[in-house]
Length: 495
Image (cartoon, rainbow, N blue to C red; front, side, top):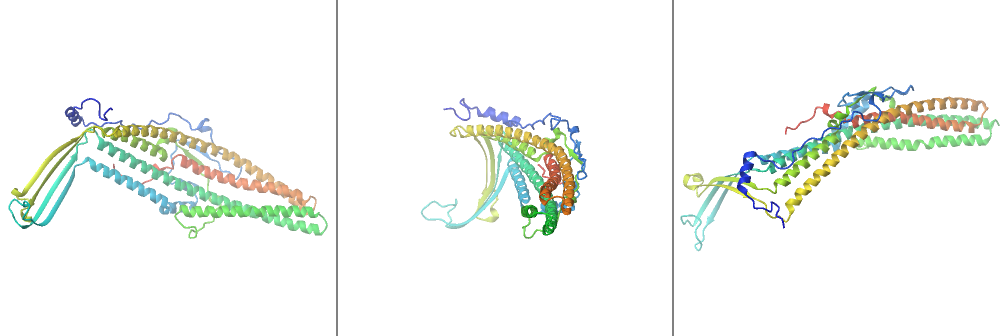
């Protein structure tokens, strides 16, 4: 069976001499992955992607290639209510507070790991009162039946770290702290994005409820007109029944919308660290938001440095690389130096007198020979973890670029959808006005108005949803580009 260190005889002295002189650190050195060399996020050139619907409800948007994302990107919507909710969430959200605590924990563990690079110094003391037996040898050189004994000692130990096990461990802990830093940034970005999306959705639902209530009112008025016409014998009962059905369908659409709005408000309360019963509900509508006219789009070469998830994956790759070095160094010789100085006396005042002093200097070396294959397999496992982490990094990068491309495509098509929905609403509204006017005059039946009414209702709700989609996808673009965390002053940790 092959020994873990080597099957050949080990010549420790030459190895130690070479390690001391060269400061050897075994294992692979981490090299940051190179950024993708692609020039576009989408198949079409970025300059050809724009959003400028001709509908009056749609503000034009253009994409500014190479522009930077501001730290407080949500202020670009010029919605004071959204700004207030974002600030409250950043102060009170418990998940963000937990992520911040994890960041501090990781940094402190890194600093603790760095302590292994320095000598360890300890001081100890002891005092005892003793009475010797007359049968056994006395404790002191001079027989004294009962005495007090004082002892004190300073000890120094230092692991020479011949092959960099400690240094690789420090490197690994530093990378893990860096990973936690970017996980915190990812939590920050996720929180601010969720608050913005939830607020926009609440405003959209509020608008849909308002529009639906208007439709209910119109349907109710038309039903009253038709009932009067029925009393005069101008229309049949079937027309009145059809209009009553239309009113019931419009009223049935309201409870699900109100339920969704209430749940959205509860979500906003939770995101801002409040209980739903304590949160202040701020009435919102989409008109309270302004759509950013110019959207910054980072260059593809910069995305890997801006996305917190990519930076966290890179830090994880760094930690896995260092772990291979730790596992490899654990199979090589380890040298530790130690020294102590102190004294023992029956009188505290004489504790450090010349005759009572004691000291020692020692050096110890350990070379693993046989651990049942454990050290070898740990090294192989560390290498497999490195390969896995490298693949995960690549997956994170590909997903990030897909995320940006999907969002850019969505912004382009959102504008087209808004223009189409606005045209549909305008056409349906005109048709409904004509149909209702003719119904009041009795020239058409209520059943003829019913289909036009339903078409207008559907088009109106679709228009509100299309407006909300533009706001939501704009938020998603800011998130996909990293959220501008690099422009935000934040607590820094010196490594």
